[in-house]
Length: 117
Image (cartoon, helix red, strand yellow):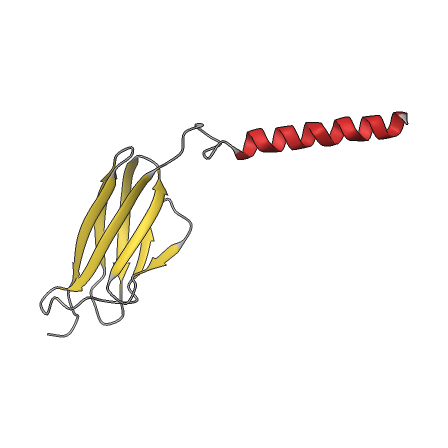
């Protein structure tokens, strides 16, 4: 009986600790990063929307890709300055500095220039 009492107390402690830890979206600051970056990528001259553009944002450990309509979305960004890198085969690479503020939905337009005229 004593053993099951200690097991029950241990389980309750772990569950309570897990709920507290999981309820904090940002474990470093305790604040939920709720800013978003949305964008549209087009060909500089034809204005055609570009699908499959590789988007790398400094500080994030993942690559994103534009959809069939040339759009992309990054959510959960913390406020700060970021450098975004846009790449697509047969287009010149483009870098862009982006400043994100708390609770801001930032919209950008990116135009890539073809390597061949």
